[in-house]
Amino acid sequence: MSAHADDLRHYYAEHIGPSVVLAAVGSGVAVALPAKLVPGRYMITTQTIAGAALLWIRQGAFGVLPAAVAAAPCTPVDLAEVPRQKLTFMVRPDATGNRGGQSIATDGLSLITNAGTVTVVITRISHP
Image 1 (tube, helix red, strand yellow):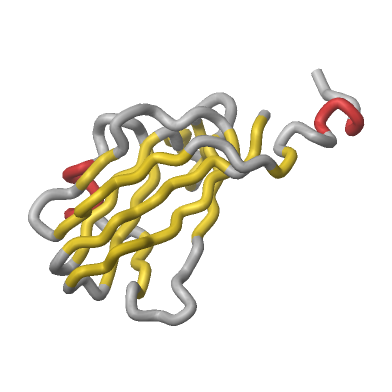
Image 2 (tube, rainbow, N blue to C red):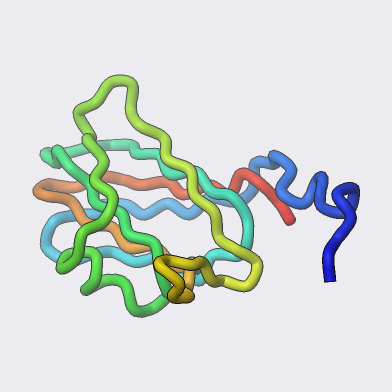
């Protein structure tokens, strides 16, 4: 069943929604989000960097990511870059994506630094 373009035109309209603040993301243990992400578009920003130079972010299934972010390749963010990077990502309505023909969940994030700590803010910037 296909939808008419007018039905989907404003599906992901820009809108500043709620934020999740993860304080003191560090290098010892990966930090995961406290709850599943609802479908939509999100922005990741950093604040209060103390001794950290890199932040790794991995998107995947909620509840299974903390060990994966430290063990497998993921997105590195250079915390020394000025201006600070702002990354955006999507969580699909069915909580799946497609990587090489294999479905993967997209409703969770896990983060870890190389040293020190950083405060990470994850803000929903769209609404379905």
